[in-house]
Length: 171
Length: 65
Image: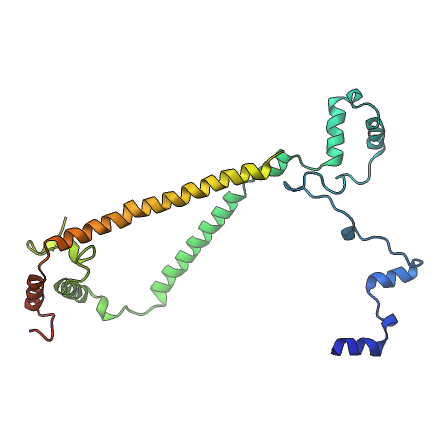
């Protein structure tokens, strides 16, 4: 609302885009920008792009285009290939070809994982304090004994791995 | 050049079907069946009173010393 109010205050005619400003100098007609014209694309799902690949033909290519208007059996194989290359950039085979990018990506990923590992090692060594006392061996064995006494997870879990008759872990 | 979508779709439909059924079968026979067997074996000759006495003897039951 505010923008339209400001618009009417300033006056419709005095707001110009840069394109319109250029048109004022060129008798009111602007040269079409590249991005507004139909473009060539190499895509699997666009078999016939809107324009040919080569826009400005050389003299040789123009002569070939003239020859194309006659019977096609008069064209040699090389001329046919040249006509193809005028019209298309990459063939389907070239378009679909794989790259070696995955090696770079894998290498980068592993490198940064290793770097992170080094950072973590540094942190453990220089930054963190001692672990809680409940992680000591004596506490852990007392804790495990209590879990076995309570018969924690007796079907498939920890108590299922303990042999109560021999008082040791099952083999 | 013809049937590009049809070929791709056939391949992927078949693949999706095989992969999903395979995953389901793997889970059933790798996880679900062994688990059912383990529970059946455990409870076949389970004596809860004996288990209770063992726990009480170990001293973990506060209300049944």
